[in-house]
Length: 294
Length: 311
Image 1 (cartoon, rainbow over the protein chains, first blue to last red):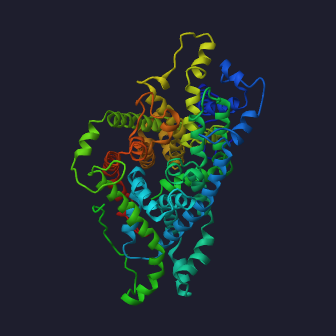
Image 2 (cartoon, one colour; image 1 turned 60 degrees about the vertical axis):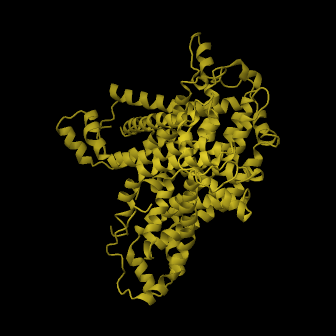
Image 3 (spheres, rainbow over the protein chains, first blue to last red; image 1 turned 30 degrees about the vertical axis):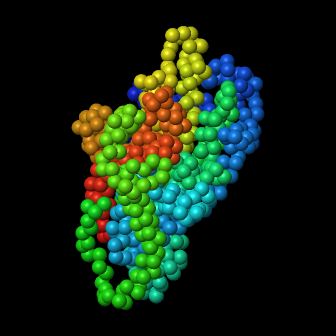
């Protein structure tokens, strides 16, 4: 390794300093991985083994029983159909919410960056402020509005809520992206006689694939992990997985089945974790695009 | 909200004569209409409604009478609310400071041309992908004094080892901080690392020529350069602090006693379980005032003033 490093600001020899760097990084990594490890091994143990105490140890009598129980027969309050109910509810909430919130975000972003609509900047400013305001400020009146219109505690209700509260981030994301595109592109399309929707569908949307991916990652993890909206607006029939998980863990009568709890926890974490591991750098880019750029 | 005034330099397009232009822009205005309605009805309407309700004597159902500041007086005499407010300050300071310090250290260490950098980054950030409910439930299990980490250490022979913070009135809030750090510090790391990667290579060369120790370069030169990233991370973390709810519900349900109550939970409980709408909305209004007074100048300076694409 005598060749000069292209970005090399430091040598790669294994000095004491570098050992220290690795030691710190590895111990930090252990801290971050420990909970995942404990969750996995706990979920694979029978309760007799858990009662003995060593939560760090590998299971002696390896069993998937807790996973099947968590999926199909754990009790969430009075019903005992497992967290699978919540899983499918989350899927049914997720798909329309993600599609609609991205659609609105993209159209808004496009309208805001290329069309000078009167008052659009005020709209955008309030929307952005709205993104930071605690949800508790809106919840009660929203519940009343939905009750009045008769859709409170239903699937459309929770989807609408996700779209409403996804608007600020999605709009910001697409506005910034479109603002980075050359204005000449838009002007050329205008000269060719393209109208608002034609330009959006034929010129802008095909160029938005990277942002669509980022927005999807952001919304899928965000909506899947939501707890407060699901709890407040979804209704008994549509409770998402996070709420079901919380019910399983906190409603157990008698001795708590920690292995089932942990299996249910892993199941609830699975979708966002898969999204995270598959998307890799895109995930970071998504968070950064939603927050850092302005 | 009325303080957000917009200066409009050079936003009028060339050849803009009234009616023709209006017709051309109509579809754009129509496309923004649903969002405008949402802003008007939800973001402004619901907020005003909540604030109005906080001046009433509503309990189970909303009333539109006027009782002045009664609810606010009650609120600040309410132990649960005072504890909530104290807790959110403790959590907020420790969580934000902890995430920034931990995130900065991790970013700096990852930035040392280490091998397997991708693996480290992935490991530090994966908790952020998981929900607060998952985080809370998981941490509740490890911190369980009967079977969790305390038992492990005791079984190793340290019989008197005690780590029962989660069931202790005084210490439980700190377990929420620990779980929060586990969940959020990776994000800070990712944001600051992106900043570190943007630092000019020449700066490092110059510092090396001058013989400045690496840690000095980081603290005195690089850190000030990362200011925008630090601000962004802080704002992100701060909004997370205000929203703190799911983590507490999943981890301690506000207990033991009321030791880990937080304002968001106070509002939710009073609105939907304790049938005290007026007190709940009063607490929500206090949250609103705190957030707006912190964020309005920041949002104004960052997004509203340098407006348009040519800013």
